[in-house]
Length: 372
Image 1 (cartoon, rainbow, N blue to C red):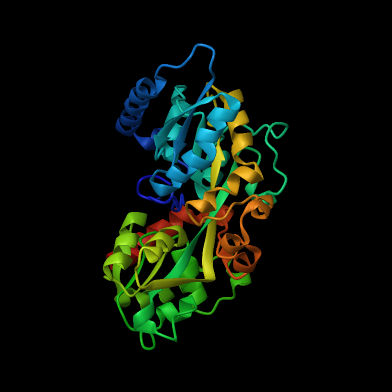
Image 2 (cartoon, one colour; image 1 turned 60 degrees about the horizontal axis):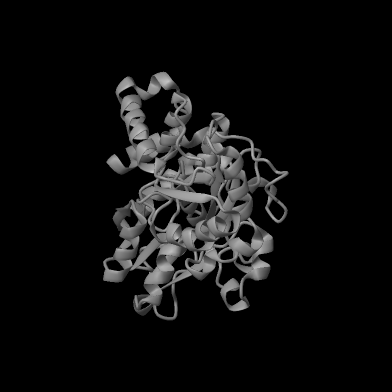
């Protein structure tokens, strides 16, 4: 989750970003490659820093915001203490940066935190090292989030968030309610990205959650045409959504649960529901050619331990992908997490493989939809 994410999530390509499609070297353009290349070289000097000749080090690119603050407290600092491996942090390394590093042979990052969609794309492009599962324990992870060369860390959800006073005892409970401008009047906001908004549009139009994929884009955009006049703001960053509900500029918004929760706790008169929440994950991967691959595997193994992942919800309510971690989360916290069994079963998981195959087409139609 780059700075645009704030609390983490990536977008298409994914959550935590604009859609990422497979980009061949020639398609990037010489100027774009040069810019990323020189940025990478500068980053190498910035992150090289002095370390003991005997001490291993790992350079991690994190998502930024309060999510990376949580990672530092729960993962990075304890790993450094317990493993004796120095961890140097960068913020907001996009898949495009990883791609440029790998293809140039100048790999700076040893671990990268990305959205699951970016991990799928990066894996297809062979940008990551295989995870050494003799070192990293994947027990407790759903198979779809313990892949050959990346592993899930946390779930984040796009949830219907609403003004409690305005909607009183009859708040919106579904995306159909969100779309209903007669029963649920008010200023509304959705994310300016097709992934998950397409899913929301189809759910609003009555498609059952277990029948969403493959996504019917024609039907989805007809549904989006119905809600478009009600949308006051098409948001682009997590920080923006927090401000929108803090200031009361909108009455209803689809936003990340990790952004909504702290603002509500700070006094915003809003609530959210996990019903029909749209779930995806963040992941870690080791870029191909990482200089400190062995140390990175040791750090990764430490970070995905259930006792470690259980600490993330203390700072931000993103549930751990490792199901065993829930055993170490206090009961009162577990019941409000998006990954608790009770909450996960009423949500809808994103299909990253579908988006890998169809993301470019969906983005083209999305841009045309907003331009109309």
